[in-house]
Image (cartoon, rainbow, N blue to C red; front, side, top):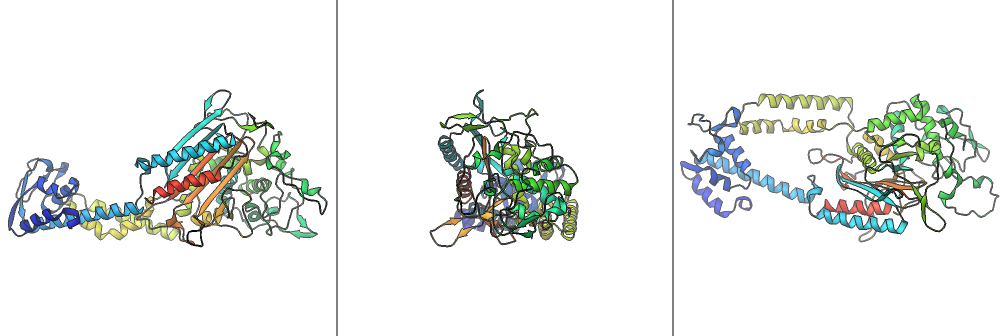
Length: 565
C-alpha cells in the first residue's frame, strides 16, 4: 500500500477513516491514484449509482444531470471511504503487478512502439546490407513479425535493375523450396480429412509409379518417406546411375545441374513423373536421408489422386483458404503486379538476367512464387496451429456452454452498479476464463498435425544451412533446443525452410517463444497469452545461391531478445 499511495496519503486516509462523516473532495481522491478512471470507477461503484447516459448521483442527491467530473465534494461515511481507498489500493497493486509481468514478458508487448526496436531494426539493416554486398544481391525484401504483429518490413535494392524498379515487401519472387512446406499444408489437410494415409505405399494412390527394388529386394516407399526425404529418390543429379563401383564421386554445384534449367512446359503431374519414375532408388526407403525435390513431384501426384482433382487446382484452393493472395504456381503468361526479375552471375562474377526456365515440372517442391508478406503470414498461420489447442467435439460443446453463460451474465448485469457487476463477474470468473479460448478462431490445421510436422524424424540431418545441427520433419527443417553445458552452445527451438532457385534465394524461419517448449503441451495458459507467440522472419532475394538462413536467425534472435528486456 505504501508503495502505491505513499506514506503521506496513508496518514490522511487514517484520519479520514476515524471520522464518522467526511466531506470528500473528488479532486483529492483523484490525487490518490495516477489513474483517474480508476477513482471514477470505484466512487461510482461504492458510493453512487450510475443512471442512463453515464450520469452519477449520491445517495441523498437527486439526479441533477451533473456528470462525475462536475461534482466537487461528496459527503460519505468514513467506512465507505475506507472501502473506496481499499479498492483503489487493490487496483493500483494490480497495475503494479501488471507492470512487473510486462517486464517479465508475460503480457504482449507492442514492440513497434518501443524506442529500442529502432536500434534492432538498424542493426538488422546493416546485416542485410553486408549480406547483399557479400553476395551481389540486386534486391532483397524482409518482413519480421513478433507474436503475430508486423514490427518491420522493408525492401532493399532493386526488383528490376534495367528499369530501376525498387524492391519492396510486396515484390513477388521465386520462393523455391519453401514451396515444399506449403505443399505439406495441402497434404496435411487431406490427412486430417481422412483422404490420405501417410503410411500407405505410394502405388496405392499412384499405381502408375513403378514398384521399386534395392539390391534385388522389393521395397515399400510410403508418403511419409517422401515428406521426410527418406525415400531414396534422386535429386537433380543422375550421374550416380553411370558411375562405376569404386569411382570417386565429385561434389557438384547443385545450381549447375542440367535439370535446374528445364525450359519445357509440363502439362500435367504425370508428365513430370517421367523425369525420374523409372530411375532406381539410391537406397532402401527409411534408411538414409537424401534431399530431393523430385520426391515432392511424386507427392503432388499423390495429392492429385487423393483430392480427386488436378494438383494445381487443389493448390489454388489451399492458397485461397490460407489467405495467400500473392502466392502463385509460377507461370510466365499471366500478368502479375509487383513481379520482380531474377538474376545470376556469369563466369566473371557479373550480374546477368537469369536464363528462362519453366518450373511446371516441380510446382510442389520448388515452383511457387510469392512475397515476404505472404510468406510470413503463412509462417504465423502454422505457428498459431502449433500453439493452439485442438478442440474435440466435447470441448467445443463445453466452450459453447461457457460462452452462453458469459453472455447471460452480461445481459443480467445491465443497469447494475459497476461494483456489483464486477462482483458478479468475479463470481463467474471460471466461466469467463474457460470461454476465453472460444474467442480464438481454430487453426487451419490441428495442433497435433503441425507438431508432427515440426518434429525431427530419425535418420534425417540437414544437408544445408548456416546453423549447425538439426534434422528434417515433414517438409520442414527442425532444430530442437540445445543447452547441454553452461556457457557453451545454446540454441532455441527453430523451425524453418530455405529455398534456392534459378535467380532467387529465400528463407522462412520461425522461432517459437520459449514458453511453448514443452514436450507435447506447448501451450501457455490462454488467460495470460494467446498464440501465435514467437518471431517469424521471411526473406527473399533475386540472386541465385545466397544463404539467408543464418542472417534470418540472427535477426530473429535480436527481436526475441527485445521481449526479455
